Amino acid sequence: MTSDPSSLLSHRVATLHGMDISLGLSLLCLGGGLMVVLLIALVAALRSGARRQAQTHVDAARREADAQARLAELLRSQSEMQGRIAAMTDVFSNRQSEFNRAINQRLDGMAQRIGTSLSEQTKSTHDNLRHLQERLAVIDAAQNNIQSLARDVVGLQAILSNKQTRGAFGQSRMETIVADGLPMGAYEFQATLSNSSRPDCTIRMPNGSPPLVIDAKFPLEAWNAIRDAETPEEKKLASQQFRRDIEVHIKDISDKYLLRGETQDMAFLFVPSESVFAEIHENFEGVVQKAHKLRVVIVSPSLLMLSIQVIQAVLKDQRMREQAHLIQGEVVQLMEDLSRLDDRTRKLQSHFLAAQKDVEMILTSTDKLNRRGAKIEALEFEAAPDKEREAGDAPPKGVESRTGLLKLRVVDDD
Image 1 (tube, one colour):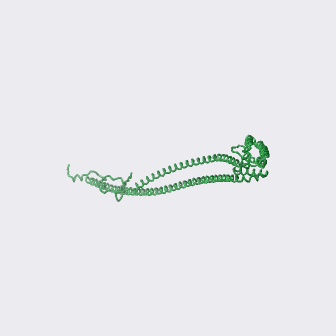
Image 2: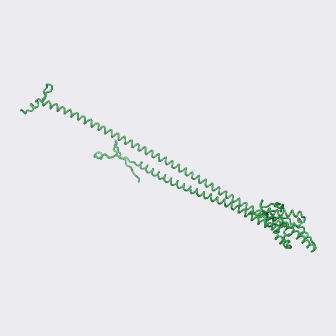
Image 3: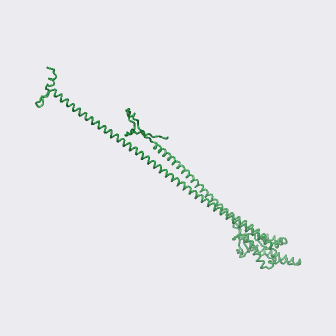
């Protein structure tokens, strides 16, 4: 068997439709097929590389668009946050100004009410002092009247000469003294008792006690007879007659005016002359003693005035005691008002402290927002060096763009 290559290539290996297929032709067809396969594989590889490169460009564009969108979103969030911070600052400033204005208004109203109350109390005190001064002026006027009455004693004899005039004068003197010394309603003239008798004057006593009776009908006829007597015998007879008349009058006063439970157990017999009163106590001691036993007190104008002043002091003390209860009640109410004012002031102070605490918390939140805003404002954008990209290192975490790699770094103030 020959080993010539040409003969070997021309050697028939198969027959296809009557056509002899040599080994060379088979090899040639196989080589052509391989070339076609290689061409197809090369075209597929080129298309795959172009597709990967296009996908890479698309991914890079998408990453760049995403980075720009995130950056725009960050800028928009920063602007919104700054707007919200400004709005919150305005709201807090408005709320604080309104709060301060409301507090100032309440404090002004409270100061005005306290000033009004103090002014009213001052006015009431001044009115009470003015009334007291008026009453003192009335007392001074009464003392002046006493002095004038002492000067008018000289003309009393002429008036006492007439019985009717004497009775009217004694009644008027007694009424004048009583009316000048006592307030209206503390006395009554010609009041009718339960036994139908009518004393000249009744004085109402304090604490619900029975009234005091004053009689002004003093018998002066016998006294005038004593004064007009020329002989000792006439004077003795006139003295006896005067003693009988005055004892009878004292007995009538005791029987008519001293009623148990209705009047005081003592009555006054008013003598409208200081000289007559002195003569009775000096020369008729027995008459005075009998009057004391029958609980009848003989009084002169000065003694009646003194008694009226004592009664006035008692009545005034009673009124002061009554007013003291009222004043005490007013003071209790004032203390209650002061206690309520103290409670409300303490509540207002607690509200102030709570509001101050809320303001401090608001300021703390505002400081936090300011620091966070400063952090957002401190965001830095840096370009990655070209050397790192050429060295083939791992790509940093960031967003690829046409100008380079974006790096975001947050600067923390804390």
